[in-house]
Amino acid sequence: MLFSFSKARPLFGLDIGSSAVKIVQLRETKKGYFLEKFGIKPLAPEMIVDGTVMDAGRVVEAVKELLAEQKVKLKDVAIAISGHSVIVKKINLPVMTEEELEESIKWEAEQYIPFDINDVNIDFHILGTNEGQDGQAQMSVLLVAAKKDKLNEYTSLVAEAGLTPLVVDVDAFAIENMYGVNNDVQESEVIALVNIGASVMNINILKNTMSAFTRDISIGGNRYTETIQKELNLSYQDAEQAKLLESPENVNPEALAAVMNAVNAEVAGEIVRSIDYFKTTTMQESIDKVVLCGGAAKVKGLVSLLGERLGVGVELANPFNRVEIDAKLFNIEQIQDVAPQAAVGVGLAMRKTGDR
Ligand SMILES: Nc1ncnc2c1ncn2[C@@H]1O[C@H](COP(=O)(O)OP(=O)(O)OP(=O)(O)O)[C@@H](O)[C@H]1O
Ligand SMILES: [Mg+2]
Image (cartoon, rainbow, N blue to C red; front, top):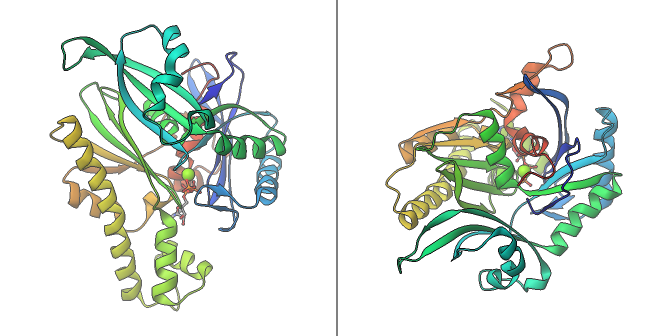
């Protein structure tokens, strides 16, 4: 995560997506996780556009309303950012201690980051050591850099809502955390985690239980809505409805299916391309499975098309797999229905300040 305070304090996950704000609060006991609070509030499409907050005031209002509706008392939150302002790279460095790297990371990072080094916040994770091409031991490091203005945009928004951002994470890592806590990931498995939101798709491929490749691509659920709007001559709202409903009224089903298939092919194509790139660059012959999350993971026909294209199992993530949900407090069926959309929020809620 990009920064966090060292003391462990209870916090909740706040996922500020471009189409909806999600909150997830969990309680961790010896028996495991329990769901304490959960809520989703849609945002109008013009409020956050491609990850840029266009109307902070209305987003703050939406966050405050959601907190009030769900009676959230905690003030400490974990949030996440993603997209162009975040760079994640795996780099090799001479072996050194964590303290030494802390000192030198800024200089080491400079050549890998396309922004002015003074404009970014940097974090790193030492992944392990291996033998370099020259036979010398080297250290593999995951470098994370986020533009300070993007961080400020989100942290000040959260502060406006009366909250304290204790953890700022990256969507792709929140997903990884969500998946790792909910499943037993085997050393030998290569798993592509794909979070398909409204405007961005985050890909994180796990190998040896660690992130081996990440990429954010600017495509998501909005691409379907926008294409339906254009091709079928509908308003944005009607196009969004047409995308979600089984058989929407006043819409030519063949024309709709053709659009959905075309955009599914585009989305699947991006995923296949990233996985192919990962395979060539890491000399990986195959991957074991793909796990989809994010609201657009539920788009009609996407799971099956992707399965056909890749020839591996494709499944939907269940962020609540190891989270107990009390049927007296929540409508379980409703939560399961929107569960893929809760993936980042759950991953954030499972963060403890101080863990890295
Ligand atoms: N059942 C469904 N079928 C198809 N699409 C769906 C379904 N449910 C939600 N979506 C789509 O998922 C998207 C919202 O997903 P999500 O909440 O993960 O995105 P976000 O976090 O707001 O966006 P981003 O991360 O890109 O900023 C919207 O485009 C929405 O139309
Ligand atoms: Mg999202």
